[in-house]
Length: 337
Image 1 (cartoon, rainbow, N blue to C red):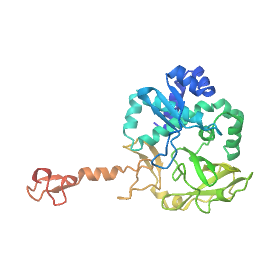
Image 2: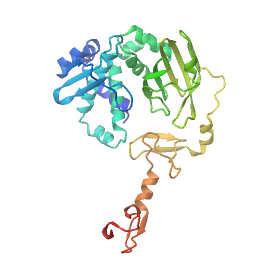
Image 3: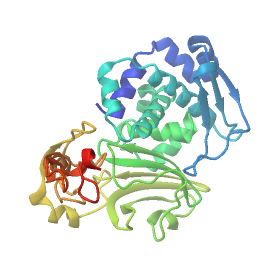
Image 4: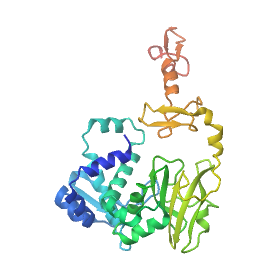
């Protein structure tokens, strides 16, 4: 199961008539079809992680609040994002619930699914086909999609990400600050909302009206640069950028493997995470403790879990053999403490 798969299923479960009315009048359709009261609120404050709380749902009262956006279309995306929370909360498929229960980042995954549902409703495939055609996703296409539809920049970024075709992310930037990111296939590293552009990044040097396709990068938490290919458009104060692991725009004459790709060819293994269910051929994501392959999504290491389960020790008092993690710092088992 993947977030995009779940979002697509929830979207398709909605009747076509309901989808059309949700796109045209989100508040009215949410009231008529789902019994939700949708109203504007000026009291929404900052989240603990530094991002703005654009909307809130109160399931007990069937009420949705959204922050006003008089100079943008963002409120429509916020409303439908909150509708996504109702759809995910009402999920009763046991396979999905089991998958969610095994995730360590369940909240993050649900938020992403709600973004995908909102983007799918506001920008259906027919609109995306009309605006994008056979063109590769670009920063210019994102700006055009926003101009020619009633969808917010955020909804357009989510919609455009459906056509990326490889791991990467699509960002909306105001000034030098990321305001929104839509991720495709769990790219790492990738920016979060309200993150400033890194010092020396190619996006910082773009001028108004400039379109730029270049080999680019994004830093991880340690500051190490990871290669991406980037297509961006600057229309001050906004910039729109598409980052892809593959060179979709033929910006490089020679595609040399990244250093971590070269050094890790011998380490490639087929990996299935017993914690979150991710299936992928991994090469560079290693466990900090044992050096074996770890899950690139939840960082779970099966080898370490097995070691913790199998390793045993003797109690200093009763000399009984017990699992090592049950011994306290003094070497006593639970019965002898």
